[in-house]
Length: 184
Ligand SMILES: Nc1ncnc2c1ncn2[C@@H]1O[C@H](COP(=O)(O)OP(=O)(O)OP(=O)(O)O)[C@@H](O)[C@H]1O
Ligand SMILES: [Mg+2]
Picture 1: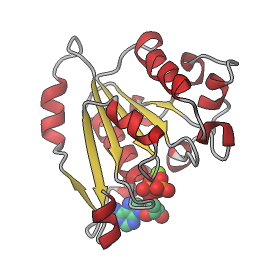
Picture 2: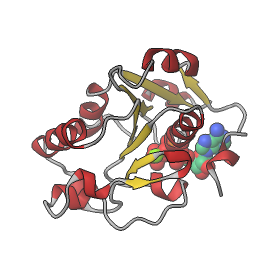
Picture 3: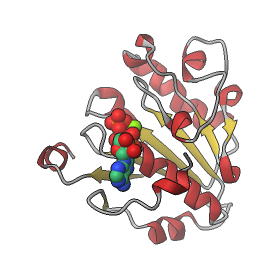
Picture 4: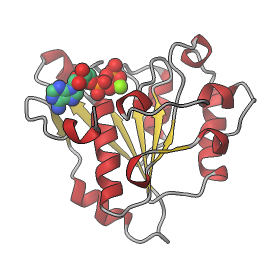
């Protein structure tokens, strides 16, 4: 399974209100500030991770330096959608065993991926101090990309809200279910 297969999906899945061209324009040259885009949507299973992965790969193919941050701390799966095998995750960063720079892995098309852990209770209940530490390390430790794409988990809990609030742009992914629209 590759990310390109997912790109062939048609409606009923929709992404609002993001426009790819606008994002590329606002990113500008490498010298400009990094564009930070959260992919979110409220309801679970609407396609957030697939949109985040495909957007990241697509922008990488367009020549941008892109980093994809898996901020679904409960059931992370960016690495799985990308077919990657990873050794270390954000859980190692929060436990203090690794730095953020240690856990970044190279994905397809030059994309850099920051994988999260799946099924680690400590990550689900992450304290806001740990969230702030991660966000700070993102800007302090890593060579800033042109675009940082943040795949959030389902729901509107504090963790999701913190990550979305830290981003300049939020992409809301919705599908053709009424609950998806109300949740978004
Ligand atoms: N555009 C699409 N068309 C049809 N099916 C899709 C589309 N995007 C994703 N899917 C399917 O929907 C399911 C959920 O996708 P995905 O994991 O991207 O959703 P999610 O919103 O990230 O879920 P979660 O809330 O669990 O993080 C997967 O089985 C995926 O293959
Ligand atoms: Mg997801």
